Structure formats: C-alpha cells, structure tokens
Amino acid sequence: MERTGLVITVASQKGGAGKTTVATGLAAAWRAEGLKVIIVDADPQDTASSWAAKSPEGQGVDVVSVEQGRLLIRQVPKLAAEYDRVIIDTPPRLGAEQRGAVLVADAVVIPTCCGGFEGDALGPTLDYVETIAASHPGVPPRILLVLNKMSRTLLCDALRADVAETETTVLKTEIPQRVRIPEAQSAGQTVLDYDPKDPAAKTFVRLAQEVESHAFTISPENHDSETEADGHAA
Ligand SMILES: Nc1ncnc2c1ncn2[C@@H]1O[C@H](COP(=O)(O)OP(=O)(O)OP(=O)(O)O)[C@@H](O)[C@H]1O
Ligand SMILES: [Mg+2]
Image (tube, rainbow, N blue to C red; front, side, top):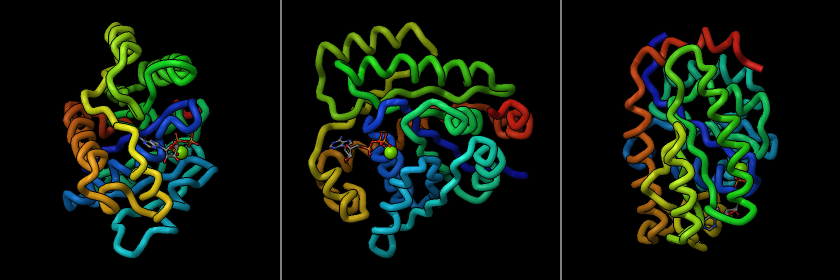
C-alpha cells in the first residue's frame, strides 16, 4: 500500500492538557492549506467527534472513531494512503490506544503546561511514549512537546532544560491562553475560522508548519513498518 500522508498522534496522560484543542487546531491549519485531513478519535469521551457533529457545514475535516490500539495499527495506514494528514486524538491515560497510536505515528505531539501539577504529570507521559517509541521496529516517531496556555516563565525554561537531555524536542511555537479557543470549539469550529485575526489562529498555522518540518525528517522506510508494528500492539 502506497503511504503518502503524515500521521500525527496527540497524547498526554493529563486530562485537559489540550490534546483535542491541538488535534483540531492542526487539522484546521492543514485543511486551510488545501490538504485532505482526517482526525481519528481514539478517545471514548468522543470530544472530537462531538465537535465535528456540531460543526457548521464546510468544516472540511473528516472525523472517524477508532478506540482500540490494534484497530489503530490496522486502520491508520489505510487512512494515510488516502489522506495527507491523519491526526490521532487520544484519551487522557496511558494504555493500548496510546501504544497503537505511537507505533503508527510519524510524530507524537504532547501538549503540556510548564509547572505545577500539569508539569508533574508530564514525566510519566514522556517515559511511556519514549519507551514505546524505542521499541518501534522501524524508525521511531519524533516526540514533540508543545507548551500550552503559557506565556514565558521560569518554569518553562526549567522544563526546556530538563527535556534537552532526552529524545524529546520542545517546539518553538507556544500556544497562548486565549478565550477565543473554547468559544470557537463551542460553535463546532476552531479559532482559525471563528476569529482568524486572533493570535491563537496564527499560532496553529505556525504549529502545523513546525510539526511537519520535524515529522518529514522521518525516512520513507518508516512507512513500511506498520505490519511489523502490528505484532507489537498491546
Ligand atoms: N490555549 C488555550 N487557551 C484557552 N483555552 C484552552 C487552551 N487550550 C485548551 N483550552 C481549553 O481547555 C479545555 C481542555 O482542553 P482539551 O479538551 O483540548 O484538553 P484534552 O487534553 O483534550 O482533554 P481530555 O484529556 O479530557 O481529552 C477545553 O475547554 C479547551 O477549550
Ligand atoms: Mg481530549
């Protein structure tokens, strides 16, 4: 099967870290470039699916629900043959869905805040994703951290220094806390359509560019490794 599309998994054990916000924001940014985009909703909360159901017509992003790790490993490569971008939105836990979603990804994007309880929750997510990535039979996905709801603080600098020692990259693009983001979501939209002039809209465009610049560094051999990865699914 010819595989053309990039697969981006959004993951974090922490509830409310911004996974679905990042998944839908990336989808909107790539769709605006004219790319064919699908969100794979691996979260039983169905947040992305409910968002799409609320969408005014013409949103242009498909959403499909796939809630098992094994099914993700089987189905995502087929979707990647059909779509330019496949974005997997995962639930706030570390289990079989995350394992499958990490194994099929070109890049794993982990949204996080810098300090306090959210910063504490990052360690287990990074350990889990890095361990699964290291067990990948082909080329492992890039692991990309995106700071959410943050302006620059000392806690962010400390986090950057910690992560500099690991396989994980902290993206330059940071997502600001903007009320337009939840307002848009309540209307079944993203901030890109709802208020294109809001700084958050430009942020998602930059984020999409930065994520693909990392994901595209993956060699094409990775795109043949899904059948091997199948045997490794939880
Ligand atoms: N940068 C931001 N500015 C303002 N609000 C935000 C921002 N990022 C996320 N939110 C809001 O925070 C809430 C949680 O975000 P989101 O649903 O994306 O997190 P999640 O990680 O997908 O949650 P869950 O773990 O339950 O799936 C949402 O109401 C969302 O609108
Ligand atoms: Mg979510």
